[in-house]
Amino acid sequence: MKSIIVHPPKQPIRTEIRLAASKSECNRALIINALTGFQCALSNISEARDSQTMQRLLQSDDYTADVIDAGTTMRFLTAYFAVTNQKKRMTGTPRMCERPIGILVDALRILGADIEYEQNEGYPPLKLNGFTYSGTNELVMRGDVSSQYISALLLIAPELPDGLTIRLEGEVGSRPYIEMTLNQMAHFGIEYQADWQTNTLTIPPYKYQPQSYSIESDWSGASYWYSIVALATDAEVELLGLKKNSLQGDSAIAEIMRNLGVESVFTEGGVLLTKIPGAASIGWDFTNCPDLAQTIAVCCGLKDIKLSLTGIESLKIKETDRVLALQNELVKLGAELKEIEKDHLYEVSIIKNASLSELPSIHTYDDHRMAMAFAPAGMISPVRIEEPGVVVKSYPGFWKDLARITTLEEE
Ligand SMILES: O=C(O)C1=C[C@@H](OP(=O)(O)O)[C@@H](O)[C@H](O)C1
Ligand SMILES: C=C(OP(=O)(O)O)C(=O)O
Image 1 (cartoon, rainbow, N blue to C red):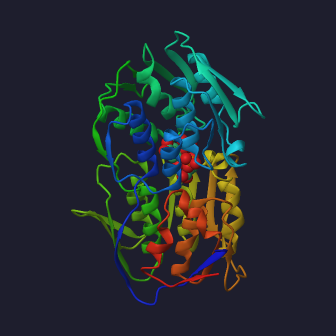
Image 2: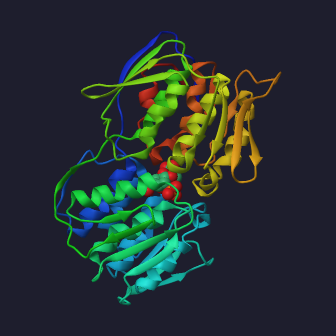
Image 3: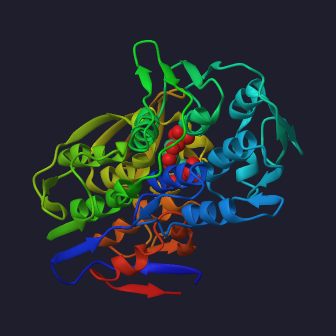
């Protein structure tokens, strides 16, 4: 399928959506399960391609592990294969080979991993040639590039003979993802220490205890439904499978969306979204929830809510340069994302007297979140989303779920 046109709904939206499981929680649980010798009973395993790829590669004896475009799969498996002394070649899509991994490789080398870069220093493809413990159990590393390097090391830390203490330098980004890692490790018996005053994390040597674990639905995926409710004229949606006390930092969507006109009420099965009046402008720091930035930028642009964004530097090294992608595509909807202070403060606002196409066509840059963040624009007027298949990375059932509330035209 080349593209999908999302048409505005003809009726008020009243629906229940059983959200897909979180790929982030799932990929952590899959690594821990592997470290117990596959003895845990995991339920609600994510259908996201990132998690399916993780599962397949953990079971495979092939030398080459191709993670496709899955960041966590690349980073977590690199640490897992290195420390469990498995000789592997790690690779992925051309974009994956442009996403930095040097900070993680440097840390693993200090611990005793023999790792070679096949092409460019600091980037996949990598060759993992084995592991001889160096005797070091303390690391100092940057915490301001990607939390995935830190989660990758934490997950394997109990396997090291002396455990591991990591001190993070710089402003720690995506901290809720690090806390998600630690919380999941605690579920399997690890008694960690996290001192967020000094950004020091300590993991004792320990054998993960096999346990059952049920993966929560995905709050990042929920954000697109919040945006749908914010933009539709009449909508009430219950999202099933979400918890109030979630491990996922993207549950911040409930708080952000109150400003954009969506109220969240927790129910027995999940959360009920209803419409309320929104604010005229908001400011948000996305350091802790970078994956929500695209959803909020598009929604504010369409609702004429002036948005100030900080903490979006890491968007440049994700599935695509998401800052650039947003800049290119928001103009098609009559809004713009401007850099106000270099690499720090950005603003989304509407372009006055913009001449718009009747059917804007949104390019998705091999990025699932570009497709899903722009699809809610169809609640107002038709929008074409190019390469809609990109959603498989995190939310394969997205279009099927969307078809329950409105007309989708495949091209
Ligand atoms: O650990 C995780 O599951 C993730 C961490 C975040 O990445 P960064 O730490 O690189 O921001 C997030 O953007 C990604 O989608 C998933
Ligand atoms: C950044 C993302 O994923 P990853 O880094 O795991 O590829 C994402 O899902 O938005």
